[in-house]
Length: 222
Ligand code: DC
Image 1: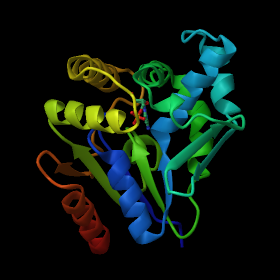
Image 2: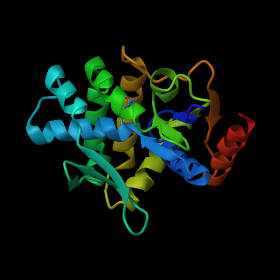
Image 3: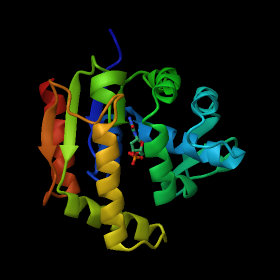
């Protein structure tokens, strides 16, 4: 039997990451944070002085990403690039904007495909991103498209960054989120959109528990 995949897609700040982590923990499944791979590609490029329009060099970086995911003793996510802890560096708005730019390049997306497929291991995978249900795992048994109003997403992102000690203004964050939404939905390759067979879930005003339980109920129905 093939390894089950739950795809959770949606725009920035919709809560995908949090929900995907909770659902994966509840089911004992592996987790793929595909956005981190685009963030890592942008970060690796900036470290090597590669311009964000040098498509071939960016695709090479994506193809040979040396990345490891883990958790510290307190259970906080840790991401290592070439052995360096970049857990905080990839979460800055700058890294997010760089990720959104490199994510619009087809050769970069193609280069990351194999790496993403390799996360599909027993007993199952929860994959979070923009195109998990449409491009990377089109055969996923459950596809969730998680949304929330732009204001709520900016507020959540603001809190998330503040908790990590990163200080940004809410207004600047709202502008970043709108810019990123525009780039992610209007790009030519793999634009952000729900798969035809995705279940849409608007998390505005809902608690993390309520959203997690809805997704777990849907898993139970598959
Ligand atoms: O989910 P995130 O904020 O970490 O994603 C960072 C950027 O990467 C986002 O602006 C769009 C892009 N991305 C993508 O194009 N496809 C994915 N599967 C995940 C992220």
